[in-house]
Image 1 (tube, rainbow, N blue to C red):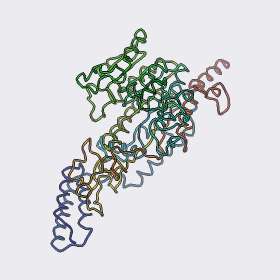
Image 2: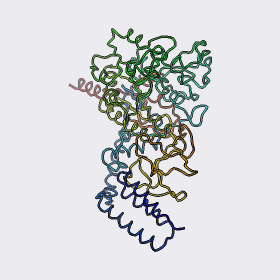
Image 3: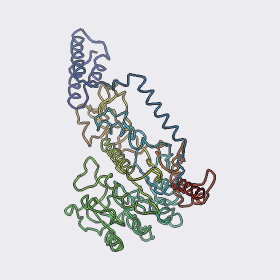
Image 4: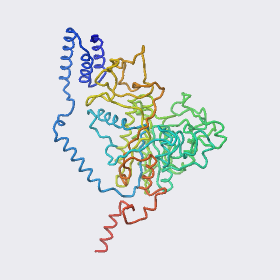
Length: 570
């Protein structure tokens, strides 16, 4: 059978129109099609003409496949030697006491997502992308965390949040309770509560904060303050009658009652704080945005009443947030959407703050405390993008979280701030297909399938809503706008929502005692390291020691020693 050249050329034209930097990619893409099988003289002439045309396109593009300097071995050797020198400097470990603790949690940010986000960040800056450094890439210590829940090989965000916030592994779907608690069984809550590092920090006199792009009572943030056997009990409206009768509290209520005076809380979730049918301040005509509480309580007003004489402020839009003077704010509650905040690509930049902007304000408020602070920052909608098969949304969320990491670095010091970046779990997200250097991360692989003779995007999912079949065959992606924000990447198995992945996740660390995050550990190890570094929770005894390799020394200890010796000598 001879190849259908006209069909191949139509595909080539469609690809060329859609894909940025597509000249080189399309040429090889077409070549892989026409050279796969023998063909006649006429087809050979046609293919030769097309090849010449493609070569002219490539030649006129003026953009090399990779930087000229990379051809010289000296470039790579110099880079490696510079990296080696930096690594040798790390032999002098930072054993200071951590005054501040920051945990950046990329929900669903597995290693493939980190790599793809790195490439995207570079391409957004006009680079090929692969050589780019994320802010988290600059952290000197990297380890792996095992993410399984006590009852699940592939975990959910609730059980994992209990692990990296409370220090114990738990069942999927539960937050702030041990594995003795059973999902949705209210009567298994009492006696099985576990406390979080946010509470340990608050009890130690530190300021504490939560910043998320999801609702503030979602799985990740709720494990910092709530004890609930069902992560979906956002308000009493979502709870069964028997749970309410059994004395269980909804998560929104626990936000304000369990740990009094959490200094900063920002994210979405307005509707869960207000009485049922109370119109939303931003979307008064949208019924689904109205309050849902059956108990008639206005949790926001109750909070305001408590902090009105303590420099407390409630904000619900970007203008209100950025108009605040952090020096005059002791407590801040920011609820910017009825449920989750919008994707960063769709965010109204006039009314909704970015994650970076929220982190900036949060740190400026929290750092006023001379005892330091603990801050949980969640890039929560990375996970949502993946579940919907919308890789572009997910990766842009990851890039925005990386910006927030960079902003936090400017506002703190590595000498007294332990910063950790990690994920709760991964996703069945991947990218491949032998793409060339600089290939658009959302673009096509430079080849056709040798089975169905159709193109495919580099990004694919193992399962999810992107599974599409037309007339018994896989969808031809060259006929759709696969570069659009909400394009659902193709998946191997049809599901309404894509699933989590079960592999280990990366843990990036810098600051005091960051070297304790090394190798492969259970996920619940993370808060124990943070507590040990800050001398909070159950890890305090070693902080009283003055000698040996175990005792921690404050940042100023060496300076104090020098001054003492100077006095004795002078």
